[in-house]
Image 1: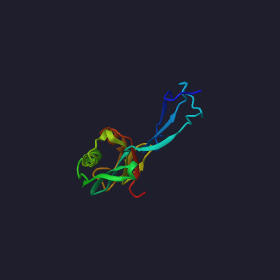
Image 2: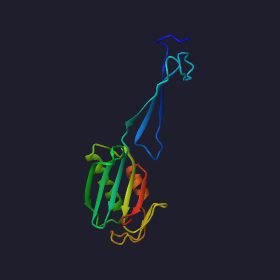
Image 3: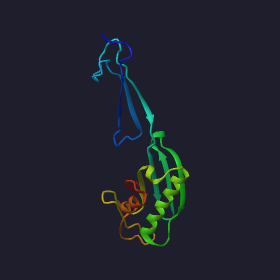
Image 4: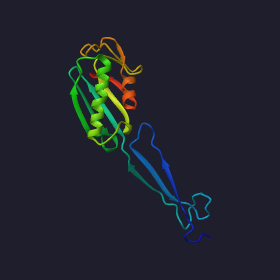
Length: 173
């Protein structure tokens, strides 16, 4: 037999998978009054309440072109709402290192506009001209960019500046 007031609540927090970082799920249920942690159906029927708590999943996007760099920051947890965006000219001198540094700066400016920091980024997607190898993280033969005829590890340069994983794609794809 059970007495009133001896039941306790259990809380289970389920962490979202790495593919879906947009929500945390909490399950709240009553434990049996015995305190053994086993849920039982009794006068205190186990009740479960499952609800979604929004968690910001911030992603950055950078579009690299021959004349401009455009960046935006979105919140995946809020239907990809754009939180900040900036645009600037692509450097005409300095080659891939200067271009990568400017790409990071434009994204950081987008984050600042949104009131965020690089540590808030879950990841960054980049569209670039040239031959893009996402597995290696390189861009090569981007002839419309200053001094970018060879191969350059754009992923490594951006991840160092931004502290977040970077995925590359061709700007035409």
